[in-house]
Image (cartoon, helix red, strand yellow):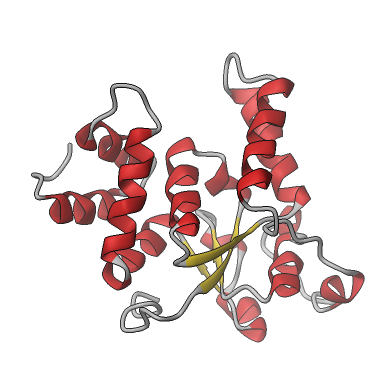
Length: 202
């Protein structure tokens, strides 16, 4: 997995984002800004978006339906071609295949429909390599994806980081990298700190 992107800087990978990645503000921001840098081609389904906003409303105080609509509008406005709706034919590829987590059965067909090469997810066990391999896909956690993108597209990923920092009043490189680390992307934070000439964030 670690060599998937290394050595392929000209390749624009088609990435389907799972809801557990889009749920995190920090991971979502880096994923979307990487897509704005045009080093990945970003996609999601309506089912994935609905899962994200449902959990944000349930878990985040002050995050209500209006906030959910604003988030979705912003994502769709920036990436009007990101939404993919799997067809019956896409779903038919999984007929007779048992999955570890049946609630994720709609994610793989969405990846098939958009010809994704990567499903970006923190739930690797939900997406067996033997199943995804049939459709030319791999499951990859965001920390691994971002790290590989830094290796292949360092300039663009540093620019993506600066965009994320600028979006928050009073944010600094250090505070933003620390937020990224808390979101589970420690390797990414360390690599970006190195690119920026900073000591490792804690």
